[in-house]
Length: 136
Image (cartoon, rainbow, N blue to C red; front, side, top):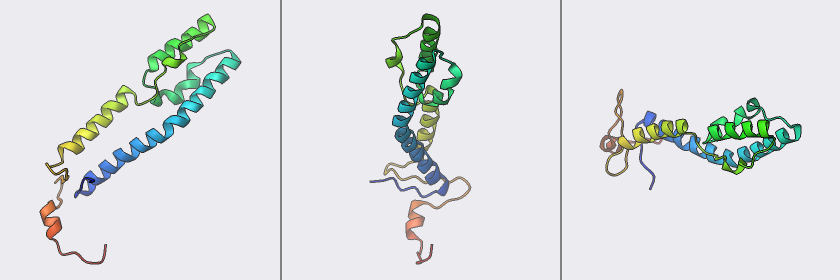
C-alpha cells in the first residue's frame, strides 16, 4: 500500500524524488548508448578529449576511471579498460537522494503515513474527520 502523505510540501518532495528516480532509470539505457557512440567517434577521430565526455559525467559513477582511460587512449593509443565504466548515480547524487529519502522516512509514523507540520497542516485524524464536499 502506498504511503498516505497529508502535507502538500511533503507530498511534492516525495513525488519529486520518485520522478527523479524514474527519469534516471529510463535515461540510463539511452545514456549508455550515447556514451558508446561518443567513444566510437573519438576512436575514429583518433583523439579522446575530456570535453567530449562531460555531458556524461552525471551518469558515470566512477568518473576518475574514465579520466584514466582517456589518458591511456591518448598516451598509449589504446585502452582495454572501457568495460570498467559504471553507469549510475555518482556519490554526490547518492548523498543527495539519501538525504531526501531520510527526510521523507523520518516524517513517517509507524503506519507509513507522513504528516509534516511545517507552517501548518492537518493531522491524519483531523483530515479524515473533516466534512468533505464534492468540490476540489
